[in-house]
Length: 398
Image (cartoon, rainbow, N blue to C red; front, side, top):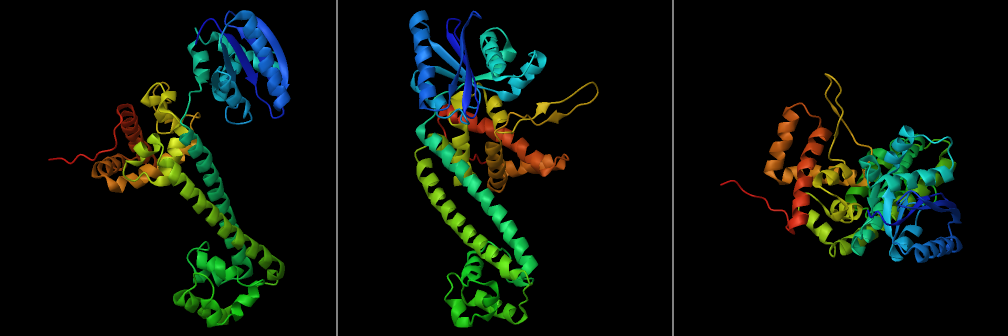
């Protein structure tokens, strides 16, 4: 960071943002509020352009909530050619604990961010709070949004499946015994083929075979259930909810498949996704999620920083005679989940990885600990592949 800059700190809110502007020599230039709309953004840039004209210095902006409430202001800041730094909220909170302010207001928070910004040239703690936002390939930005959307839909699907399973068990005991998975498409189609659940017990074999995905085997299971079908008194009103939930699960399944197709098409144009996807076991969804969340490996100073971001590195938590580790809080939880899934699927694909996992388990490590330990090594591999433009290779011992 340059010592000759106009430095801007933004405390991001939902409807309003507090802005503090100063020079790198600690001189305060301006403080004001802006609204989160086109007029507020225009006011922000007009005032900065006036200061730029007066001092003839480049502008650097540090803000909270990058990719959160800050959108679309963060993108417009970069379009104006200003350097943009994302504020690590956890480290900012720690700084406020060490150097507390007399009160808690948006104005004070903005000044604290500016204070850290101005100290970043000389204080390592302050420097660690700020991370410069670098350009990321557009395909990785798309993957980030699409995979996050996919994860939300999958989470919603899980919640609805759990709910419908509980409701079915309550109002129609025995119906779930004809399927091992309530989310099976044939079973959901069976649930919605009539407007009332009790009518399901009266469908003849010809009618069952007309239901999509219900063939002879499943029709036979349904026919075996029908003579003993029982329904609770509240099926009259709960049954309607179950049918609605079944339709929602089918709809979510269709939406997820459409997203999977889009994600696969975009991932073909992402060098980061293709490099990660060359690792055995790293499937289409996992590689796309990792590429989207990483964005650009240039964000990280070393592979250790990437490993911590992915949740594959533990922090030392030793004191006196006690030795131990703890999980860092500044982890991208989506990337960590994708990495854990991919590493678990990678193990059966590569003998050396299986041996390493078994070794860690023999040392007394739990499954997730062994997965993270192997994941830590794979982060080094990913880092090397990206830096040298190579794909994964399995070397056979001769």
